[in-house]
Length: 175
Image 1 (tube, helix red, strand yellow):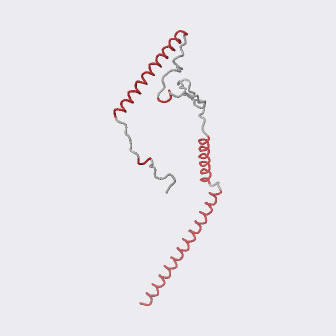
Image 2: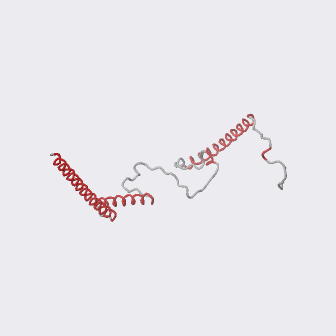
Image 3: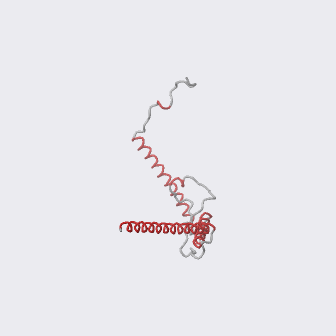
């Protein structure tokens, strides 16, 4: 028997379910808590806005540290030096003249494609070693086929001559 004995594991326990009334009560409590937090933030923002209005700063719209952020972002304050701030550019600021910077992989892929195209061009011109070997092998095969065709033609003529001679002998024997 195992060391712990039979003390009852987690599998045999009864399951407990949350009643719908309890869920509703929890949701109402969360809503109330949010409403109270929003009111407090609104009061703080109003105080900050009044102070900014008194000081005469107009660039409070661009960077408002107390603005409400969606989701968990508003709950956690993180200073991440690697996080790039998205800045929108105007159409007049975009420069179309400067060349697009390619990544290393894109650059290597373009170089590979250019090298392949160059090789195929040289191969079609017959300037590569492989093309020369292919052309030599092709010329040998053509010569062999021509010789085979000549030999076949000669055999055919010899058969026709033999057949004509045999017909001539038969026709002479019949007379």
